Image (cartoon, rainbow, N blue to C red):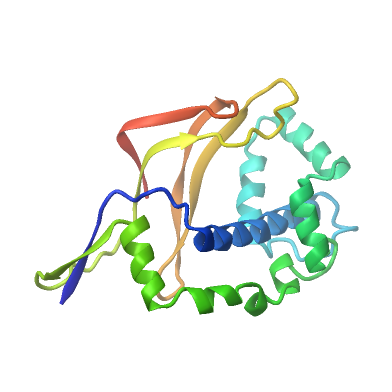
Length: 214
């Protein structure tokens, strides 16, 4: 049995992989906005509350904000177009209507949207990608594989790439957490950690030793 070893990953500058990540991220952003709008203006936005798991996670985080910040954010949701121009263009181009009863991803032809993955992520590409970007190496026959029953992430640093409102005084909060699915599609919570609340563009918080979330 062959085993793999994960080394230090190189920067993910692969064009195809980044295209995949960007498209998934854009769709998630639309679903998050849709969920927030449904909770804010249910008579206008018709999607079923809770349809977006990502949006629900964000909404739950907002619910824990201090009262004054929560009220200010909810006002922005009601009165402001929160979509950046590029995301708005994506929604218009793909015909995504946030007021529709269907969640954003269900309004898209996902097979067509991600067709490039089927043709590009072939065996040769996968081999190149894993070796170059993930630092994966085959170690040969080293005995039976260990069955892992848990997942954890070691965070070495967190960088604020794009402050929410750089034109106004203030700074961003960053927290991390998530949901994991096993092979039986059973959900488990990756506990949230609070990184900090004083981030401006380019600010980095480093952890030494690495911060573990699981």
